Image (cartoon, rainbow, N blue to C red; front, side, top):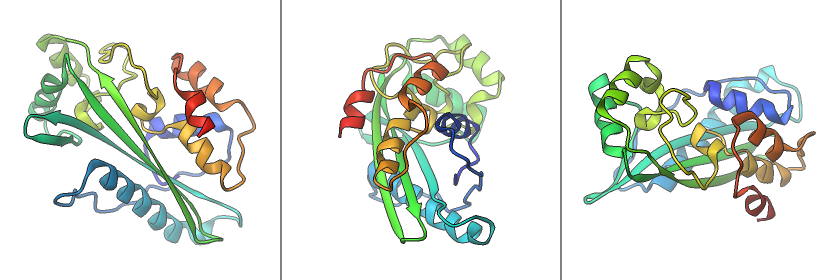
Length: 219
């Protein structure tokens, strides 16, 4: 897995696959005029290809590289604004204040690379995320915990104290950083099948009744 995210490690482990973590250090700068979809897919693909080259001597035949990139996008009057990881507490406060009481989108792009065939598959999950109307005091307390500082959009959907999101109707795992049903259907094209019921394991782990997993897996 070309990521050091503990949330992605937690979710990928639900598939009971054997995997190693090898973060890919790449330039993640957003290119001028690049749409959120293309931006996320480009980063995921670049991470997968970069990690494949760097770990080639350390793995056994038949291995695959899984990479993901998650982007928080807020539709503002001036257009789509990409909210990256906050550079300061003040920026985290601004992002959270901007998002509260409104819906935004989270784009998580997947790339799965099979070096033996030179085959790269990609997928993209877009989830509408309705934020609750939390107070300034709640924002301040959440920032003081340190949790927002390494997260796009300055929040973790799964944080039990801040609990930023209400009434989600999409893929919860994608907002965490790894849409498992999208990953399952992508791996299926490469002949890789999980040894357990992955949607069931995912919902049990994150305590969320997913309304979209059947539709995703049927496509």
